[in-house]
Image (cartoon, rainbow, N blue to C red):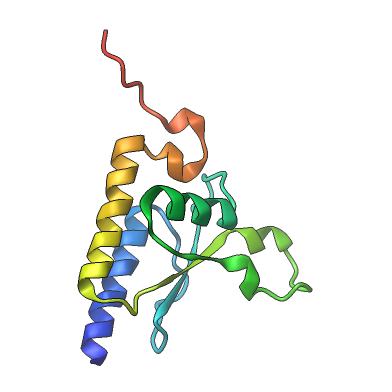
Length: 124
């Protein structure tokens, strides 16, 4: 069972890294990944999670609820998202496919909140 979770963990870590998330700690005994949104993204944790749920049907948890209110550097409170990898392989692969399809179909702008990331789709 431990090996199964390690494979799932490594799969989700690679997926998130491919999207540009920063992972400070590789989970060793948890089924959650706490990932930092890329610095170039203009979305907050809540904005990203809302878009992910509404546009891809993939659920994650905004990270701001995991910080103490007295923590210094409150701006970082809005930069983290928690993903679970305690799902079956088929569920994780389907979520990855939905995220990749959405990013490919709408461009990375849907993820980043930046309109200048969109590529021009009209041909001349």
